[in-house]
Image 1: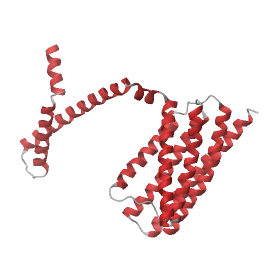
Image 2: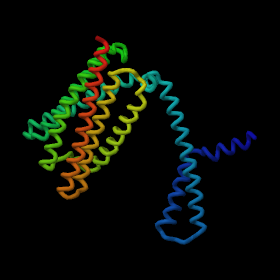
Image 3: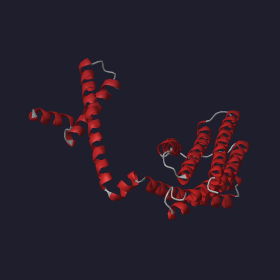
Image 4: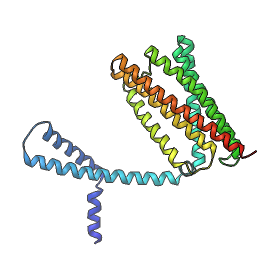
Length: 288
């Protein structure tokens, strides 16, 4: 029995040299079959069999590597804490987001001054207000644990809601400028595809965090989730403007799509901010 297990193990997990040879052989045979338009049944069947076996072997190897990497990650005390300690992970995320937003706001502000652009100035104002909102949470989490002082957290939560309302005004200014002047975000070259991948990642992560962390009874965490969800919505808007600018459509179509998406995002953010303010005010009355 052990002998057969050993043989099976060698079949599923051959050496690296054998895997490289198999991948090269499968590629050559598939190239011959599909691109050279040869009707050789024997070669075709051989290509399918070898490529299927190679795919299975590669997948098994990837699964093994992922498992080993996962064990190594959890064995490290720093990465283990980041993956298992939710409040710690949220803190790190807030610090990183604040630094990135601050740098982006600074770049847009400099662009506004250098190019005398209202467009860059409006975007800079948006990211400055977003930095201020994140700064409120950064200062709080740097001194307190989540969920310990509910009254103060609800105060922070309400302040974030008020600032998000102000932020919505800046966003409305961006949308108006974008629609009236036909402006939008522009990503040179393949950067638009990277931006698209990042936007999808941000949206999925924001939704995932909303679901996963709903059990944590902390207004500060709720505020962080709301901000991430709002930023993801704005990322969708910016990606749409870039995609329309890159791949076209008539001016009226582009104007309609940007107007519609801009209005939806602004209304969504307004509703989020209104709920945060109303909910926090209601909860704070219970502490009086």
